[in-house]
Image 1 (cartoon, rainbow, N blue to C red):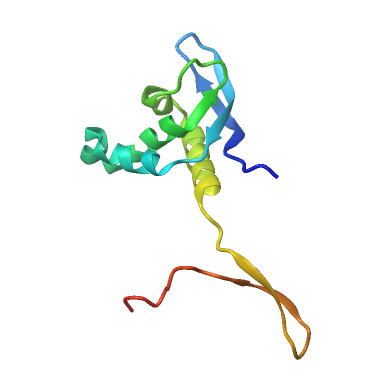
Image 2: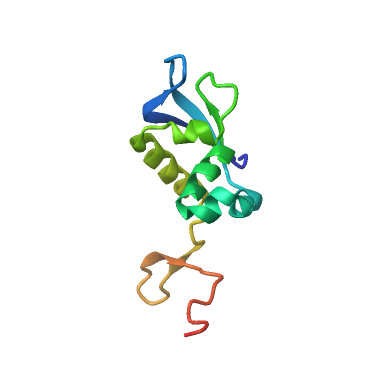
Length: 125
């Protein structure tokens, strides 16, 4: 099984470019550490932290319809429903689900999964 790094999507409304062409289908790639760190240096993010999601999406949306390139201007031009959709997709594909271990109770033989966290949630408490 290959590790999936790119995810196809279809925007609910679509991006309308300068010539009036509607672009709905696209591809988003997994974010890297640089995708999350480098935008923090951008003056637009320092002035308005809400702009971080615009830059992040411009970095990870690698295809949108027939557009040659996706930049912050493209993401700024999305309808709010499409922006929310892409923000949700970003969270969905980049969040790591806690690993689980399948267990069987030695007494009753009940089967269940247990979340295994590598982070000590009691640290600092």
